[in-house]
Amino acid sequence: MQRFKRKGGTIVTTLTADEVDLLASLVGQLVEMVSEGEPAQYSGPADDSFAQWARELEQPEETSEPEDPVLKRLFPNAYPTDADAASDFRRFTERDLRTTKVAEATAVLRRLGETDRGRNPLRIPAEETDAWLRTLTSVRLAVATRLGVTDAAGAEEIASIPPHDPRAFMASVYEWLGFAQETMIMALDR
Image 1 (cartoon, one colour):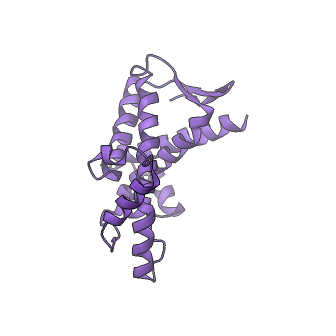
Image 2 (tube, helix red, strand yellow):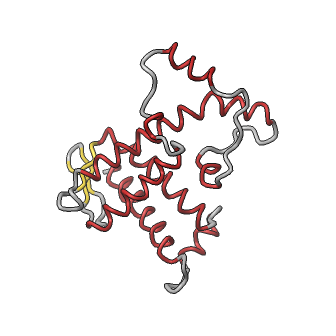
């Protein structure tokens, strides 16, 4: 991946076919995980408030914290010392958070598809950069969680993994995603 550059109101870079495939795979896995295997049910907010309220009322009274460590990281417990408040918070916010993550990831996948596996530059309109940054952050958090990174010291350890370590490829993906985020932010600041 080359650095992101700003050209007018668009952020642009070039990706290889392998980079497009990798990023599309990671974002697709994020959609699958966040939507619990049913991305269509998280296709967007209801057009009508009554439909949204009905959907919320159909949800179970208690909403528990996810078991998957990645989902715990993406949807942290808002009230760790108050189980009832945490359950209520999840009940009334988590579906919208999931819907937003799926919608933003879908926008990322659409732009990746427009590259024709790297034959065309990746062009991200300025109004989509926040969705890209949030999606890259979610994917990077997922990779970090799988690698066991929980703090800055863990991130530094990942950078020193030797090439023969089985985690080396995912560590390089973690670093690559960080490079993408950093250069996109730098391009936005110009």
